[in-house]
Image (cartoon, rainbow, N blue to C red; front, side):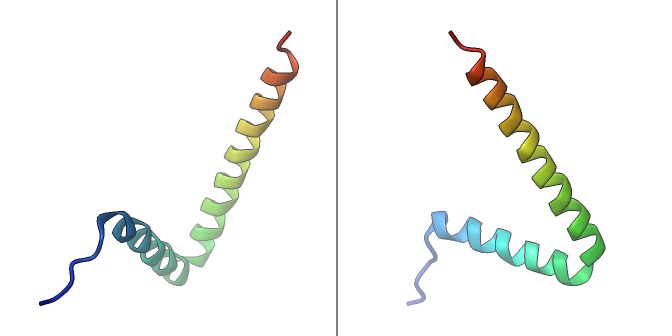
Length: 56
């Protein structure tokens, strides 16, 4: 019998494979996507800090 992969392990592994494939095939686009993602995370963090500092 072939063991079936657990669903919660399958999705992260699939996403890592897709990300690796994207980085290898389109490195410039992958760099732009990573920069945009980090900028978005920074924007959200700044908004949360502003929200928290204006409480009370």
